Image (cartoon, rainbow, N blue to C red; front, top):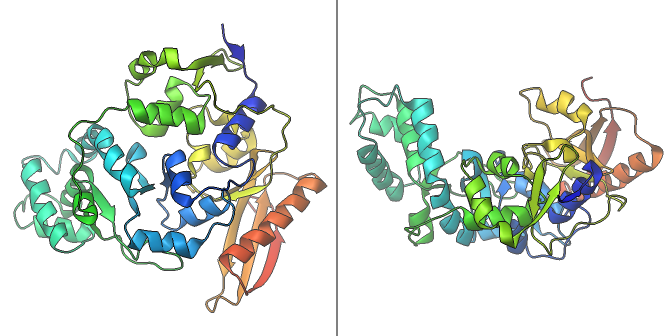
Length: 368
């Protein structure tokens, strides 16, 4: 029988792996690879996510590295958009092809009946390698060859069967743009590996999210049948139990600080993998947070206090970017020391997003 780890012990271990117990002196590429990517369904979320984790994070330098093609954004974990290094994009994208094919067929099987999927994907590849396109534009152009289908479904053929990256300026610091895509191979000038297994992905997950269960890694990745992968590597792992007796796997030398280690205040974007990276989210999602955030269809940026999600936040800039307002909404009243820590971290967040602007922090109550 393995050692039982309490909820707070799991919390502190996860925060340490996620670079949230203290800001790390890492380069952005090293951090993004350690975290196995950053979810960026909202295209600018990687800036707040990395600022909250790294010492001396420079958003303009990070943004420029997308233009230099050192980082890319594409569909990976759970089929959702992630920011990863170019190296990881090539290595990881084939691991998720089966998942993406399954999602395409389950979600769009009916309108794609009678469509030659391989031919449609190849036609889309030629189109986007000629010029980056939105999925809507791809679908409309493919409709010429498959007029009995639907443009949305045809656009999704490209999204799921090709390794498609979103090209700049979307995702650049303080810039925006439509979601235009080309293939990863065309963008990077490199081929995808022919063979791909999830083994390395699973072991990297334990390094960044452990200790964790088989269900946790499957929920995080969207992949199935990972129990056999974990069993192949059981001899390389240590085994713990959670408070409910569930087996948790981890790397032997990974940090597991004590449950009484202080945890700093942190502001995180919506969809951050730290709070959706486990099937059992109780290690970081409080019962109040689950009721307030996860039982609705509205995603919120959240803040951590004492290591757990304790409320939501939003940041508003006026059109001239001369005044910025941070609104902090706890789920319940916070102790004075936690509130003061959030004030300090909030002031730093405002300095990061709106340097030189006038700043204001407002407090409210989530749901009001």
